[in-house]
Image (cartoon, rainbow, N blue to C red):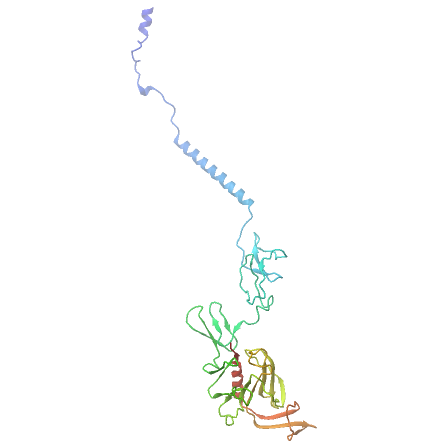
Length: 344
């Protein structure tokens, strides 16, 4: 029996019959298609979760948009702009910390300002007339153009000193361009006059009131009939008679008194004016008298509806003057007066 069992069992060192490595079965191989599908699904799920989280966070934030650059004028003269999600105007300051600095009265018109807290308040002729006076134009011989785009006053042209953007220049009057300039440093003024006119300076004569006359050459043998007589220290004399009216003349300097003298037909033959704030060398009774020659001059008064020519006249508003004048001379005198200005 033992022998039979021993025959049927292999010995310990004897290899099993038909044993090869390939005959051993390993774990099952993974399916590559299923793995790829699983990874794709996983990535898609992660993307969906991320997009959902982003949408949820974005829905909790207020929507933002660009606001237009408009400004609203507040009662205190400041401006506020549009802000917030609905682009509504910010509230005007109602006290406490001011949204802008009120610099009205500093002599500078703050027309263009920034919008941040602490910037100067925007000013206009309505909100700050003392800084934004109607000096929106440059006078003759003043600067024009430039980055600020300064405009010349009516009747003047900006003569640029270059042919490029933002070039600056000087305001010139084409009608007085090329005229000569008379300057008096003692009385601190200058005035221009054209060809055919001259200057008679009697400011140094000891026997007469100081005067300077700009006159038309050849007018009645240079007797200064057509002239502009300047009296910085005044002169004790009566003004002529005839009809008068308040003058509408406007000069570069402030005028305290101005009167037109008229012929009986309404033509203006003379102007009297006095300056409000002249230099210290001028007196309060200073004046300028600009007149043109009256041809065929006759003085009369009206009594009982009749002209009386043997009327002895002086500073009497009831008298009348008839005659004719050279209107071109009258126009030139007004142009000469428009160039008069005080100097420092």
